[in-house]
Length: 358
Image 1 (tube, one colour):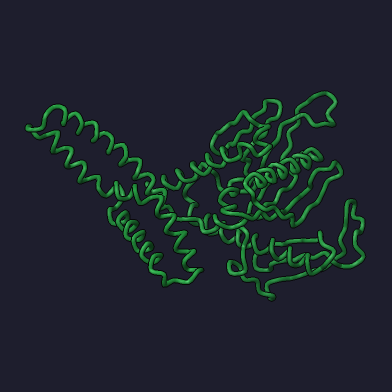
Image 2 (tube, rainbow, N blue to C red):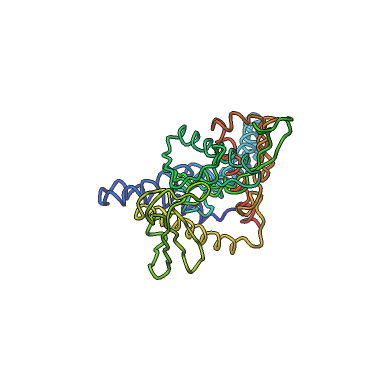
């Protein structure tokens, strides 16, 4: 059972924010922050008020039921109403608990997505390309902006690796469950005997870190420059424009050579590095918090197989929640992506609630 004081605090906070917004005494930046908090609270206020009124309603209805002076029709109404408020009480309690769960501050951030071909040779690179196209289609439907930071193509026209920044509202919260190994089962175009091959690609989704999140100091960086190279090691630039940046305290290394300008490569490299360090620090904290608790969604380990795309059977299966959608073509077109993400998000919330109850 939720402590009444916690629920009352939500209502008091909502009223306080309402008064601040109507005072006209706050600057634009502060107004936007308070408006967002007020809007978030508004979604739960009705449930909070009903929750606090439960005991009084429960007592009043029981008095009617147990009162000998109440007629049968009134008693029947009270019994039915009592059942309804019991159900609403449980629903409201769950909604309030979900609302009170600690918020992931990174959820509102943009996301950097890194896709790499895994086992399976050229077919793996083609699948990596298909995954990127899927995320690109999802982004188009949601009016997100996609900016390619780095790209390395394979001989077959697929992708060895691609790193992209996706910008919009609450991007990281929408994509964070995509990190892991994605496995594909299908007949490659080069297969002459119709045999199904299995290959894989890895996806890493990082919240975009801003300067305020991670402050990089020159003394912690080793920056090497070298000549850009293309397929087979051939030189594609006559100047040392490629950049390799090593963050000495963590050992994280980023290489960038897509741009002809060394300065632009350094800027892009630092953007990726900042987000990888931010993600590294977040993972350390998360592992410390949950080392004794196993989540159905998984550990976020990049080596964890999370999803299988079976083309012969037209299905996509997420192994973390045992969800299978027999709409693979629609999924790859970005049509039913939300159905998968909502299921994963709901399970993650349930895991967090279970942690609170243990």
